Image 1 (cartoon, rainbow, N blue to C red):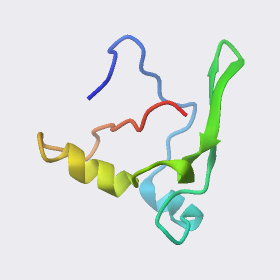
Image 2 (cartoon, one colour):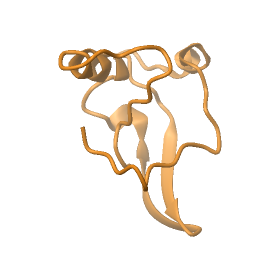
Image 3 (cartoon, rainbow, N blue to C red):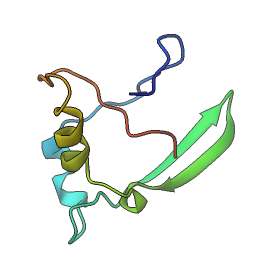
Image 4 (cartoon, one colour):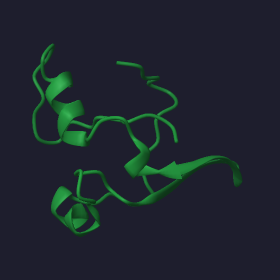
Length: 79
């Protein structure tokens, strides 16, 4: 895991997995645009569908070394 206790932000919106289902492509990736901003300046942008692994694959990998339970937050990295 890469993470910084003092530098992780979530939001301004959180959605549940079922709300994202309509946006999956034929390979299971989410066809959603995302941006990363610092103080209003865009520092990154991409599509979630450009990820190398699906969230299901990342969750399966993460759960090999630890217990993953409902409510855990697994980050996919910066766009």
